[in-house]
Image (cartoon, rainbow, N blue to C red; front, side, top):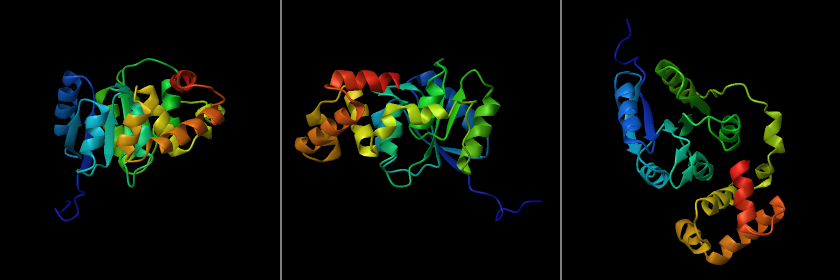
Length: 207
């Protein structure tokens, strides 16, 4: 018999999904399993990133398509934070390249919404103890991704550009000067071999 002193604390989970129905379903699913404690729920990326400044999460469960862009917007920002939650991308978006993109941008797991709910719950538990969970991937393609040349900060700024942010807006978000943003933008253009933000965004979206 396990005493109350031997019980592990619940895994603290945050969710971010644009669909109110999906958020409600995930809340119910997590609430029925004593291994987990739902501590935040967000409808978009910016709301999620703001919430985790004040709450501590072990695991974040996020959709792939989530305003203002996709899950890479969240993943790229978490890479520059201290002690970020481990991220699982949970999506019904069907593409052979998405799991590879999810891994390349630092997520801990990818789960399709076509899987049974128990698969998602087990993945959350595994990710919480440090495991990575992905379908079969050709990991040799990770190094072939041109975005691998970018620093974490450059990748974060590029994802902001892809989300439609201006240099001024990015500078305000990061509490830096617009000249600093322009410096990073010039560097990432050079590394990617592009001449303008349109070309950079196009490369980002297909990589």
